[in-house]
Length: 308
Image 1 (cartoon, one colour):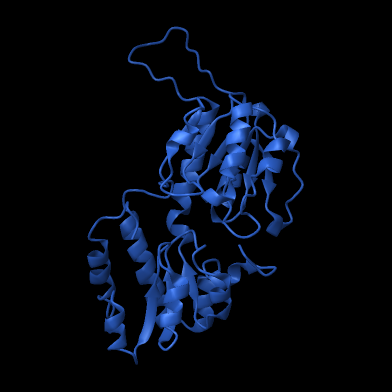
Image 2 (cartoon, rainbow, N blue to C red; image 1 turned 90 degrees about the horizontal axis):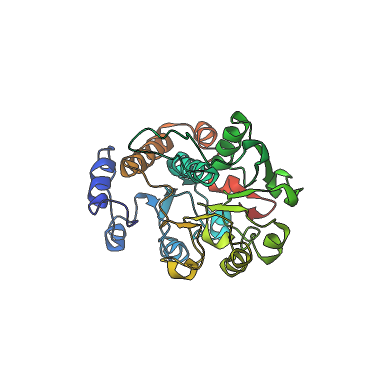
């Protein structure tokens, strides 16, 4: 359970899930052992030790695995490949929230709105020229698609870096803003490293609401020391909780505590996602279930032998 969730989330989750006929909600492995012949639906989180848990569950009849998170780097690729049951992730639960967080950061970086308590006769708005912006979007998954649509509708020039879509040619000399929206895998780990930052001009804005380990923080710090006018918006970090003091040398750095995907009724949306997935799994024909959840089935995210 995440820190931002209500303290009695498990009790609320249990109440709703047990409204499904013939479904019993369990949190202790001992309870499951007493119901060893039952069909099992597993709900995991980003804190679940999946490798160890999957070993303990080998003797049980797992029918469905729900991972209602956008990140799934704690699910080993070998586990996903070998699973003989569908693993459904929750990208859609937080996609809009992370997208809007990214847009807020982007617009703030271009110039925060100057609000006043009385009429300002100069009517000045120190905002960057839209025509000079060139935004590098890294990753075009659920969130990246929303971002590129926003940029197109706003007539903002952008480039896309996504090797899984064949988008790898970037004119780094034009880039004014980098927005990281990729998942974490062996190809994206430390994608923003010293070599990457050396290609950028000075004063580039960096926005990362995705995964902390995509950025080599030491390389980022070195870049920022040589680029004091850059703006940085970080919501995720290589190690969490993060000691923010290591960034205190920079005047234009904005840090939040892994909250880009958080919003008022997220607990309710998570539970609705779990309920709908369970009901659909047991009510729909297999082909119809796979079609409906095509973009959320984790096995479908293995491309060129990489879990993206």
